[in-house]
Amino acid sequence: MLSNIGFPGLFLILVIALIIFGPSKLPEIGKAVGHSLREFKKATNDIMNDDKDNSGK
View 1: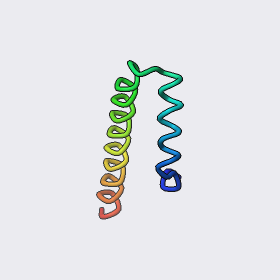
View 2: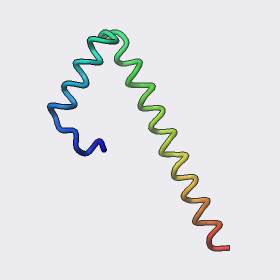
View 3: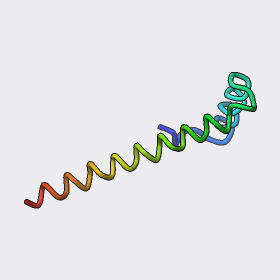
View 4: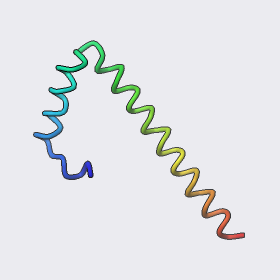
């Protein structure tokens, strides 16, 4: 889904976020999004590893 968004699309999203949230909130929002993505990837990897461990038994 995100692979179809090019540079112009990302730039447009950034401009809209800047208008909506203001420049002072963007680092805070970016940090929260990054933390959420990291937790999601960790949970996904844990589930995949558990599935591999259980399939071998």
